[in-house]
Length: 201
Ligand SMILES: O=P(O)(O)O[C@H]1O[C@H](CO)[C@@H](O)[C@H]1O
Ligand code: HPA
Figure 1: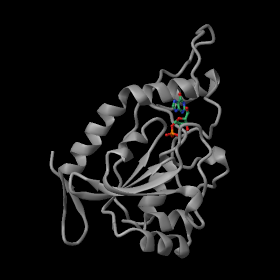
Figure 2 (figure 1 turned 120 degrees about the vertical axis):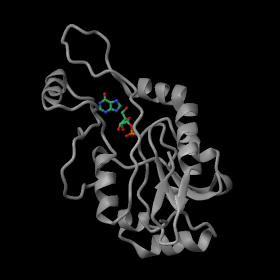
Figure 3 (figure 1 turned 60 degrees about the horizontal axis):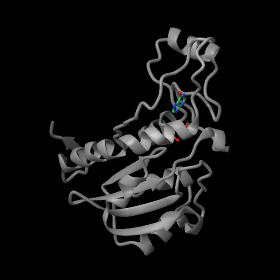
Figure 4 (figure 1 turned 60 degrees about the vertical axis):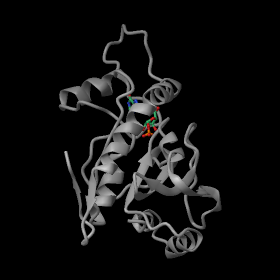
């Protein structure tokens, strides 16, 4: 699973460097979104690397994304957490595929929100879809979990606006619950010999 990062980077030297720096060989990789990076702090026996110290690794530019790759153990499973992800609006390119997301960094306009609603979209984000597309392309099984942080404004007369600080604040408020959910999920995972994962419900 640690090879997940190779697909993002297309760069063996990055993977080689990481493998030489940590004895951890993760079975689970978690991308921590805005305000949810604290999950990584709960990992035991941590090896942590700033993105800026990892050869060939992209940099995190979004406020509240620490920009650290943290290896460690959660409920007996070896994990790697990305404290900070990469977005199209930061200049990262997407792979081909069909997905529903807005490009950001601006939040959708009321006209865009109405259009998305008419198209049957229930939730809007600026990430996740390309991550799932790439992971699936690499043959990885993916579980996506999004915290809904705000209501999308579809009325011109609504004065309440959405902003990143508000998103981070809800992330902080719900961080404990999300951490519990992910921790429980991981503890219920059974990893077979052939590396497929079954989640006991
Ligand atoms: O960065 P992630 O975790 O996706 O969270 C969300 O928060 C930001 C908007 O406030 C956007 O980057 C959006 O995608
Ligand atoms: O309202 C939103 N729109 C798009 N992305 C988001 N990420 C958090 N909230 C939003």
